[in-house]
Length: 253
Image (cartoon, rainbow, N blue to C red; front, side):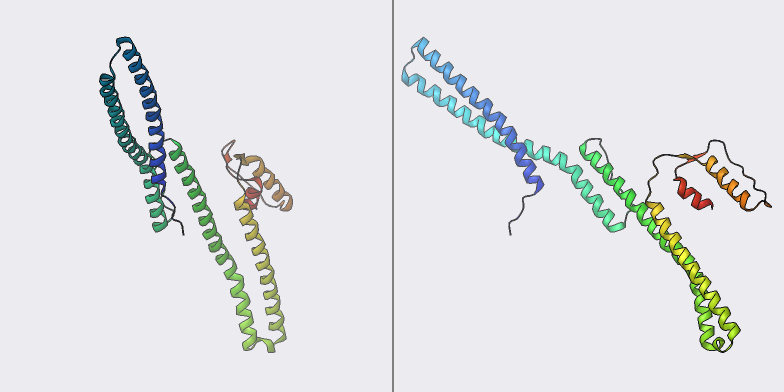
């Protein structure tokens, strides 16, 4: 199986290669210029070959030293630059390990506002949404357990009574079956309400709504159903909250 190269190696190699390319181009231009300059000087002053050869050797040696220096410098610069950028990546990696170990309470520590900082903010937003979803799921399980426990207990109690002695008494038998049937209907209603609640949890509120018109409409509906009751409401004017209209009506009704 082929082993993948580390991101650090790729970043260091790419950075060093770019720096070496610029230095190489500069060295090539310098070599061409010095060679041309040396030829011009040789023609002007009619230097002998035994004089030109040492000068050319010195130039070649200097260019070789420049190339070695450029190679070492590019590697050092590449390592320095990669360490600078990978420092934030390593920090994110340690934070993710901490989140994996201790749970969703931890968040990435963001120091800058660059691309990595923006990535960290987006990751934290995802964690916020995930934590909210998990909290809603836990709340849903808790609510479901609480709401379903009572009718189930009533049904079980009536069935146990029938199994022990109630089945021999027609009146108790009919009463227990009627109660169990009503509680079963209640279970169905609770399941539908809980499913509706989970759908409402997934609805994202696009804007805050004014709750006063909705509350007034609900009160009007109750007044028509129960004209013998008096409803009084006290609320701040133009009060707005982040909720869907359907969800608010469900909570109030």
